[in-house]
Image 1 (cartoon, rainbow, N blue to C red):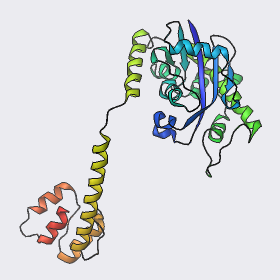
Image 2 (tube, rainbow, N blue to C red):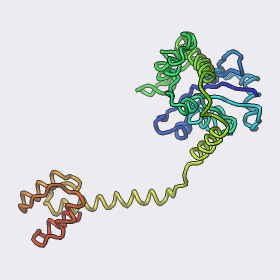
Image 3 (cartoon, one colour):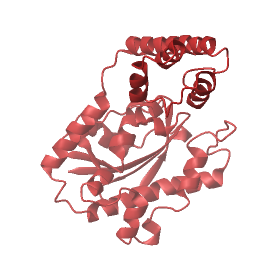
Length: 287
């Protein structure tokens, strides 16, 4: 069995908080950190324009063909690296989930924290194999535009870029050591099979009628505007919309002497059945 230990550093103008699939729509791979079996950890700097190292290309080709004697291990790779590799603008690699193993998921399956830094501390990794403490600064610097939209890269700050490359290499080393130290009783063939199914479901997503969704949004906006106009007419412009709860309650009390505790559904339904309530107040409550 050949094992590829891998980690990506990427750049995107999209916010990762919106999920890896949207993030990947405008994503480039900057660094591809890797190690094969127990070999040294290396980093392919994709930004140099150099071709993918032959040894890496061979393992990835076998993985893409779903070769049963090849396995790739990532840290949070199932939820990030693998989906990103499928869509990145400068590198397209489609690895089936049968050939994907995830150090973070394995840690979670045994009740351990997911972060590589926390796991490094738990397992007492040597300083040179621990997650680089300066890593977050480098990721923020090189993996997204700054507040002014500027992009920093290997040419704008070569010294920090060298640190960034080493940070990627250290991640691969730390992940390999940690993965081997993690327990495996909750990560057998059956668990891996469930993991594969779960990732297929996540990547397939759900079908959505976009035309219906857009029509519903448009209809809601139209009705909201109509109700706001009706509220303004009924209150002689004192209340801008029916969603301005405090202003509406104050207007009803001042103009009609009706005190309402709130505008919850139950309150509105109860007062609409009140025969003594002025019709204009009932209309405001309906709006």
